[in-house]
Amino acid sequence: MNLDSLFERSIEQAITGVVIADCSIEDMPLIYVNPAFTQITGYSKEEIIGKNCRFLQGQDSDTKELQILRDAIKSGTDCKVILKNYTKAGKPFWNELSVSPVYNESKKLTHFIGIQNDITTKVESDMKLLKAKEMAEESTRLKTDFLNLVSHELRTPLTVMLGNLPLLTDADDMPEAKDIEEIAKDIQESGEHLLSLINELLDLSRIEQGKLKLIPEPLRIDDVAYDAINTVKSLADKKSLPIIEAIKNFDFIGDRMRVKQILINLLSNAIKYTVEGEVTLATYQEGDIGIIEVTDTGSGISEEFLPYIFDSFRQEDSSATRQNRGSGLGLSITKKLVDLHSGELTVRSEKGKGSTFSISFPVI
Amino acid sequence: MSDKPKVLIIDDDEKILRMMRRRLMKSGFDVVTTTNGYEGMDIAIEQQPAVIILDIHMPIINGYDVISQLRAKGYKGKVAACTASVGARDTQKTIDAGCDHFISKPIDLGFEDLIKEIMNG
Ligand SMILES: Cc1cc2nc3c(=O)[nH]c(=O)nc-3n(C[C@H](O)[C@H](O)[C@H](O)COP(=O)(O)O)c2cc1C
Ligand SMILES: Nc1ncnc2c1ncn2[C@@H]1O[C@H](COP(=O)(O)OP(=O)(O)O)[C@@H](O)[C@H]1O
Ligand SMILES: [Mg+2]
Image (cartoon, rainbow over all chains, first blue to last red):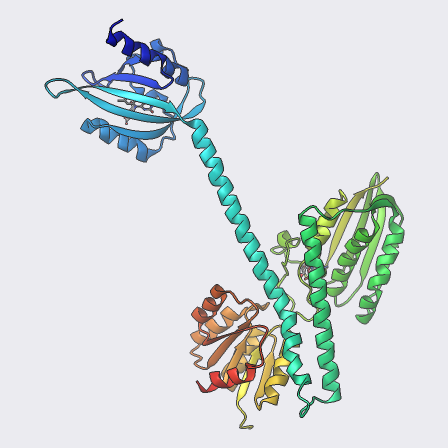
């Protein structure tokens, strides 16, 4: 066998596309394509020979890459580009294309040789990597934002506690008894706030890591409901807000402590954000769904804020002061606890009129 | 009129207002407080306090907007941002918005001296 036929044999065997275009004919038609090229593109030899190779392109080619290719062809130099191409069946693939010019003895450009590699797998895995990297960066950013928020929320009650201390430790100039009482109360409340913040943070982190395990048992909603009302009763009494009980029993499976926590969160919000009127706790069954509704006649929630209401640390900046402020974690935890129970928590509200938070649980 | 230097504190947290009021009054300041940034701007312009202590994260109007609007109205007095957001970026933002100083929460034992320094400096 002579060397030429060995070369030809090699090209026929290659898994890389090899094509030759004739520069002496207008529009540089292909005069040779190897089997790998027909394999990659899905076109037969007969369909391709005599055509310009651009038929592989769609409408969405990268114009920069294409320009590099045009410039190289025009100036008779070589280049390497990556183009989006389509197979005969219309399937997109990433074509890593090298073209190089062939000159004859009189330095006249006669042919271009094109080498094609289908690098779709590589491009796609690069894209996936990039996407994963972006997601990791996003999650780091979210974590940092969260830590900054936590830091801010912890520092605020600490400011009250540490800031007041020097007033109580100056033996020569003690505040009056009624001032001491007020200072002590502020410190006490700030400490309690700090503690509940820490507990809520722990809850949230346990839930997010999937570490919060429910202890499910058969429950009567009326039991849990009265239990929760008892806990928040003193809060409501302080504001002279009646809690209306519209409680009809349904039986379901749940974690007693967590269901109570859900109800307490919703009830204490309803009390906190209501000045006048009443708070209603209704429970009833509709088909095989148990429904719990906490309704208030309070400040309501603006349409703009509503989509964010279940986000951590989100609070609507409407009340003049943060006198009874919480952490903004309550609803975020509540929502997650309801989810863990395969329930659904939704909210309807009208600014200035009041809100209804409603939960549906599957009953037994 | 008292000859004590006047400090205006704008903070939406009433516990913090009470605490700072007591600390500064004890150090010989005349103290005015408000939880509302708009009211704070009016007080600033009417009463020209020696120093304003300005919280940043507040409902209704935040501290950045308070200081920018005050400066836009030509207010020249000294303003110290005082916030629990203590990152470098937060600090820079308050300075860019027009504050002269940055105090981080919790405040420390040197708080009163710092306010005096700001007042005199
Ligand atoms: C030898 C050779 C092989 C080529 N192979 C491909 C190819 O596989 N895929 C492709 O999209 N374009 C290929 N081209 C480029 C197109 O044929 C054409 O030159 C390009 O689209 C720019 O010209 P146009 O703007 O007239 O379309 C090849 C060009 C030459 C000369
Ligand atoms: N019943 C309600 N009426 C009006 N606004 C509410 C009610 N419940 C919650 N919100 C709004 O949603 C925010 C987030 O609630 P939550 O997560 O419980 O945090 P917070 O600790 O502030 O109560 C509250 O700060 C408040 O703006
Ligand atoms: Mg709450």
